[in-house]
Length: 149
Image (cartoon, rainbow, N blue to C red):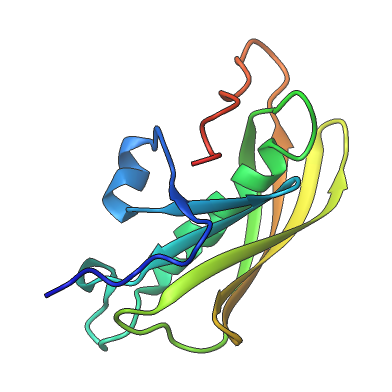
């Protein structure tokens, strides 16, 4: 069986944390300040109902939000999730190519706010909004090339 193709412009994300390695492979496409995060739904992502597991989709949205907020300004800053709200709109199925599209609403001194849509083509699978705390003290900024594929 051949591997499904990855859409043009997407590259595998380098240097994923161990937890995210289990989810991947995960891809990224950089357009200006935005990083569209993509993933092909595989058997390991499925739940007992035969659709993509909700926890996996939430993890993808949370990660895409954090990546985009971290790299929204120069220099990149480390972020941690404070609040994440999600709505499941339609199921994702085996083989679907899911893209996380993030919109940054506000970058403050201590908190950042953004929303994310997980899409399969024109089908909206999940919407999420997140609040992230900006880590100020002692943490090295994320590597410049980490999420550029």
